[in-house]
Image 1: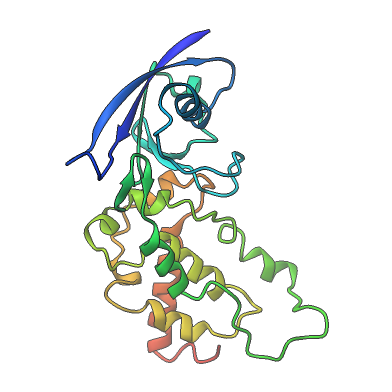
Image 2 (image 1 turned 120 degrees about the vertical axis):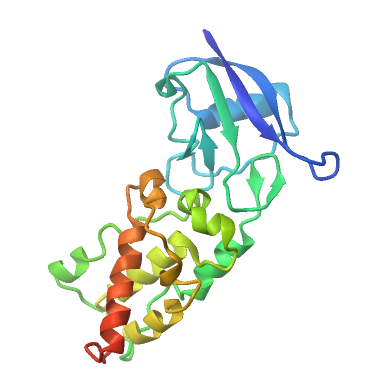
Length: 240
């Protein structure tokens, strides 16, 4: 069985003034993932290691981390495919570190809540469902798949320097409902993101797009809403 060195970021606010790296030797076999490696450390080498995980299937987004120079889901990242015997694991950027790889995501969730990530229909509830055509449904592809892992926010240069910026994840979710034919609050949603720390703060660096584990493009969503806001101010969009 091959052995790999895990360089893991460690920080305990009760003991440390600043973060440091600690190395662990981890036996690796087959398609073992970085998350499995972290669990090996937790269960066999250091039970104090702190990190988040849940589904282990790339669905919940809990295990977003910075692994060997890139933001990834630890549960989907196979150790041997990293082509390095040294695996460096750090917490998500742009967020306060609570302990080790565990970050404070309160602000992330507050911004998600701010964009009202749920339908705001303009008509009473139907007897059964709100139908969509195939073309209307297709507009949501590349939007609904977001799992809120935070990798995009961690990689965003603006989010790291502007704590009030809504961030790529929240803005992608705002656009997800702007584009939903069943929603009746387009104007309200566009006004929510039309401010200094909303769509206009994006610098179109595309780092969010590069790291998204679901290959989504928050930048495209931001640009789409920017165009719609301009159209709204020109009087070209009045409804919804």
